[in-house]
Length: 114
Length: 111
Image 1: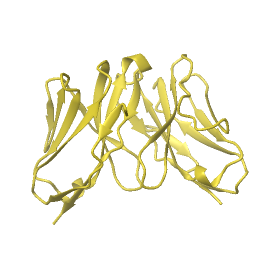
Image 2: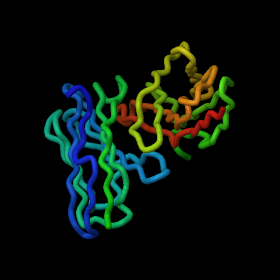
Image 3: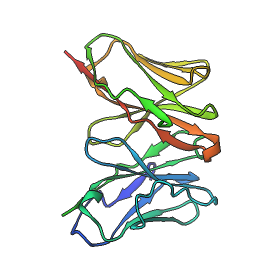
Image 4: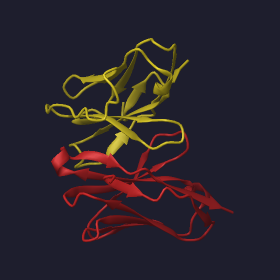
């Protein structure tokens, strides 16, 4: 597709369950970002992948959060043992060369932990 | 101190008026600058890049002041559809050109 694609668009899960969120970046984009946005709040940086460099994981809030990316393709964000405070929209963005070009966002995954 | 700071607003703007707001960044090595727009419950979308000489796109004008480390966005002839949160974005070479977002400035255009 032409844009960043995220799935699922909505996810409701029970507290304590694991969830996996997927991001398909724009083809050829070397950089990929995950952000979290709670209702009424700003964007919270989670993790940044840039080509073959080690990912910048400085934004991951706890060891329950992890993300992987294979090459310059799909990325998955995994949240283990979900808590109610994990409820938020998780946004993925990709860019051409790590900030040298603008980034484009997917529509996000709205996660609700009940 | 946050790397990128914005006045959260809201800026209440009469339709047809001009509104301007700034964004300050702390790292003098910042390389690229952007303004994004985010509508309620939607993803951020690129509004415009900000170039050193300043640039204009229709009713929107962006300026960069490297000496004072801020960028600005001016909206002329405001439309109701301009109501949104405007996000300032900076990339820092030392951080691998990672995008760093400000908290956003909310603009409400009223009839």
